[in-house]
Structure formats: C-alpha cells, structure tokens
Image (cartoon, rainbow, N blue to C red; front, top):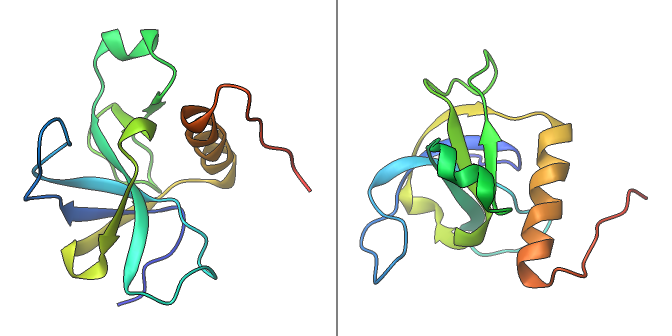
Length: 121
C-alpha cells in the first residue's frame, strides 16, 4: 500500500485518549513522502464543517470536489496532528490540490507558534 502526501484516506483513529478525535474518519496525509523510514504517516483528521469553526484558525474549510471525494462540507483539523501506523489506513478516498496543501502546512506551522510563516522556495 502506497500512501502519499496530499491524499485523503479513511483511517481508524481508535483507540484514543481524552480529547483526541476518534472514530474511523477521513484524514489528510500531510507529511513529505521522502521523510521517514517507519511505516507511519503524519495526518490531520477531517470532520464535518460546523460554522463555529470559522472562529478558530486551525480548522480549515474543505468543500467536496471530484478530486477529494468528500461527501459534505468538511473541516481539516490542523490542531489534531498525529503520526499513525499505516496499519490504521483503510482505503484511499481522494486528494487535495497543492494550493490547499500549502495553506494546511502554513496553519499547522502556526499551531506550533503564531510567529511561524511558510515561504515558497
């Protein structure tokens, strides 16, 4: 099974502890394909969009498209970044474009420090 950056996969997030997002749900793979030798991937969970998410900077709105194959307006949760074993990955759903991926990376960086900004090389 090949899992690549910018792909959306259905992933089993259970078991969880505390406020970690749970269930089997779509997740966006954000880690670079060339980094790491372990059978794990860096992901962000995706949940249904709620208007209250527009008030927090780490929830990124994602509309359904023919490429991402999401079935409803969704939110990519940049605050719930996780590294997961590839054994949790069930099936590929779709993928996002490079523009949205850059926005996601920028917001993930800002969850580490509001001073961080990404630049294009």
